Structures are given as structure tokens and as C-alpha cells.
Length: 355
Image (cartoon, rainbow, N blue to C red; front, side, top):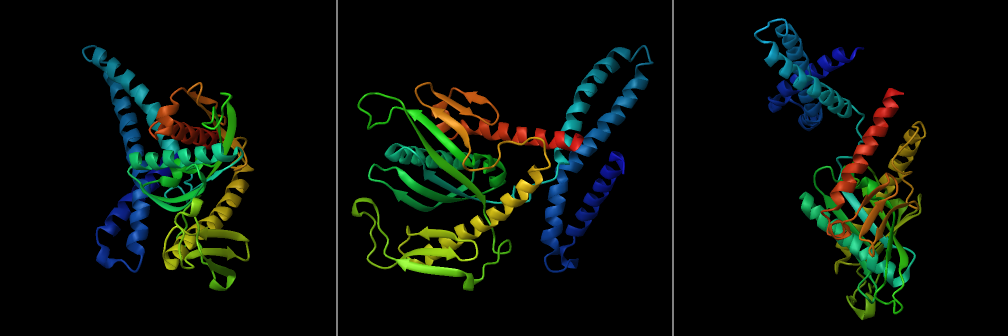
């Protein structure tokens, strides 16, 4: 099928869907939601395709005007503008037509864990967690803390949060990996620069319809929660540990005083970890057929270095360095890295389609 025929088919389908959802009373069950999503997904493609068709048609008209001596000067100007616009619209359309990652529109579960470096790694993990919290606020997303495990200095041994909003996973999925920090720790008396690390995992948040968990496959333990230095210690067995026996995935939550709330949070994380394992398996199979990709997705991979003495942040996957570490740690400077990683991923996918 030619590209023109394919686009004509998509435009016709978009019109058909518009007619269908304009009469919701005639639809059955979940058809309205299904058709509305398809209509929304096709919208950017159709809008760009129509703009491209209009620009190509206008270019043909302009070429005819070039033969008229009185119109030639104006037509030349219009021709130059259209010859710049058409390649841009063509590129935009190619991106819009790329196969969509089914998880991109999902909310996400963020998990940050201290790695090598002891207390300094935990302090860095806490800073990363707050960086993502501020980034989420700037994006207009909802950031809900699910669990925190602090050390005596206020660092985080591990922390998790649920982030909800528009295209959360699409923007954050490339944050998974090892983040390395280079700086002089507050506990260092000799002024030497130390290297520490924290691991970030971004999981697509699974709904119950995505992952069905059999209660018989779960081992649920309840126990008394504890905090650093005797803080936040509950006098009831409200903490919950859930083990998914078939996969061995284990989740523990103790932040809430209610056992029911801790169980709900733990199940939310558990469901997302199981879904993510399947998602990573599918992505690995797809990636095997590609010549290149943005990182391997392996969470043992060092992806970014934060060098405080030099004020430098470097993403090793795309060789991108920015000297605005304060802005990055404040969340606003993270936008440039997220955008660059998404653009690189699109470029790799486009290159694969053309091969």
C-alpha cells in the first residue's frame, strides 16, 4: 500500500470514529471508551497528514504562478517557505506514524535505591527522589509517596512513589539505571571527592486489567514497622510484606498506620513490577532486531553522572553534558535530558524503519 493510500485510510477512519463517538447512546459497553481512544490517537497523525497534503497542493499552485511575470516574485517567496515546511511536516508525520509503545501513556511507579557509597549514597538517593518530585510538579503530575526507608542522616535507603498524569512513563522511562554522583561528602574531613551511586527504576503502573494476580499465589506477612532511631514505630502489626510465589517478587510497605492501606500500596507496586518484567522481556525481543537503541535498559548500567565540583551532569548514553547541575537537581533542568533521550529513541526507530 502506498503512503498516500495509507494516509487516506487513516483520515477516513478518523472521520468514521468522529461520527461514532458523536452518538454515544448507539454504542455498546466499552465501545465509547475504545473508539474515543482510537480517535484521540489518530488525531495528531491526521492533523499532520492534512497539513502536509495542503502544503503539497499549495506548492503545485505556486509553481503555476511562477509562470506569471507579475506574480513571480511573490510566488518565489511562497515557494521557499513551502519547501522548508514540507520536509518538516514529512518528518513530523514519520514520527507520528511510528509504532506506539503501549506503556507510554501509563502512569509510573518510581523506585530509588541507594547503591555503593554508604550514607553518601543514601543522601544522593534522597536528592534524586526529590528531583523527580519537583520535576513531576513542574509537569503538572501527581506525585504520591508510597514508601520511604530513611537512614539516621535523612538519606533514603530506598523510596518509591506513584506518579500519575499525561504520558508519565513516556517521559520518565529512560531514567531507569545507575545514577552516579561525584562530590565531597559532608562527612569527609579531608575534602576528597568521592563517587557514590543510586539506582532508579521507572515501572509502567499496571492496572488490574493488565495483570491478574491470584491470591493463592501470594504469601502475605504482617509485622510491626520501624523507623530510624526509633521514629515512626507503630505499636500494631501494620507493616505488610507480600511475596508473589511464582516469580519471587517481594514488596514491603510500612509507611501507613493502616495494614489495609499498606497492603493496597504493596499490591500496587507488586502488580507494576510483574507487568514491568513482561514489558522488559518484550522490549528486549524487539530491541534484538534493532541495530541501536538508547541504552540497553539494563538497570545495572551507569546512565548518568552528576559531578558537583564541576557543576556538570553527563548522560553517557547520548553523550550529552549540561553545566547546570543546580537546575537539574531542582527538576527544571531535567527536561532537556528527557527530551533529548526521547528524540534519540525516535531517531533510532526511524532509522530501523528505513533499513
